[in-house]
Length: 134
Image 1 (cartoon, one colour):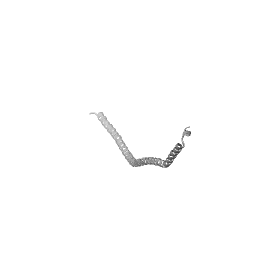
Image 2 (cartoon, rainbow, N blue to C red; image 1 turned 180 degrees about the horizontal axis):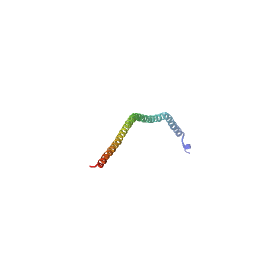
Image 3 (cartoon, helix red, strand yellow; image 1 turned 180 degrees about the vertical axis):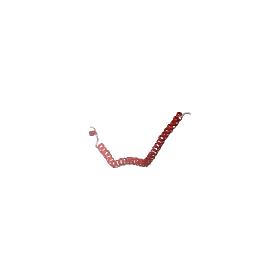
Image 4 (spheres, helix red, strand yellow; image 1 turned 30 degrees about the vertical axis):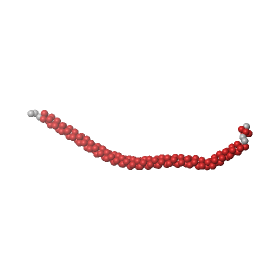
């Protein structure tokens, strides 16, 4: 009913306003799309810069870890070399000590035999003196 009550001039005015709104919206559509694309690309650039900074930080950390591992490897090689040298020196020392202990044991056995021989000689002298009359 509202459409029937409208006069011809109202219809023309309404169509002109509608036409103006349509043309303004068409004119603003491309700049709006451009603005949206520009905002999106700016956001993407910010994300890309953040990601690039994280990648660079990770690469620096990886390089630091690699150099630390290399230094640690060198130190480990030095420790292993020292350990092998010390083991050889220790083995040589143990062999020399065992040889000396064997000699000491042989000397003790020899001394024990000599003491036993002296004891037997002294005992026989004491026995001979007791048998002889005074």
